[in-house]
Length: 155
Image (cartoon, rainbow, N blue to C red; front, side, top):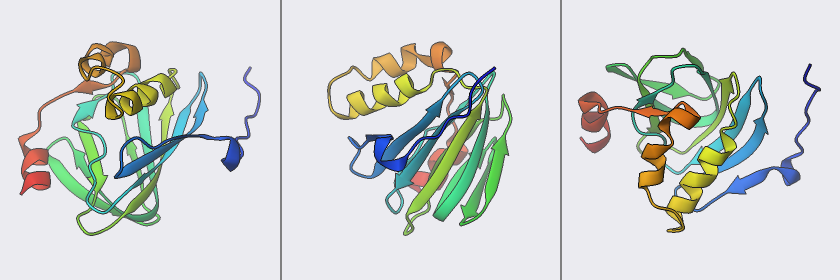
């Protein structure tokens, strides 16, 4: 049985290699992985992908977030909640002209903090971007193409 976990804000690990986004690592247990991400106006978050095992939960703390859900793009506003079950193709990024502050929770947890650290190292030029693709099975992050998302983000 897992014990309760409290993460104090000053003790949380902050990943800030991307100038348009930060990720604060909150919890990475067998039952859940959680992070809080802040995106500058219009900044990209995750490209189109899906999870085979994890359910991903989004809570918009403030701002506005565009989200791809299979072939539909929806906009989430402050206070909105989204649950994405396994198998659903999704992507996200801050809405053009608006910042976004979002709490993400995955259940079950799978040791995903190393994935976020890998992304941070790639941003810093300390890791090869090919490592992200090679990690898809390990982190249950399976990338897909989405012309719908590309049209929405590029215009």
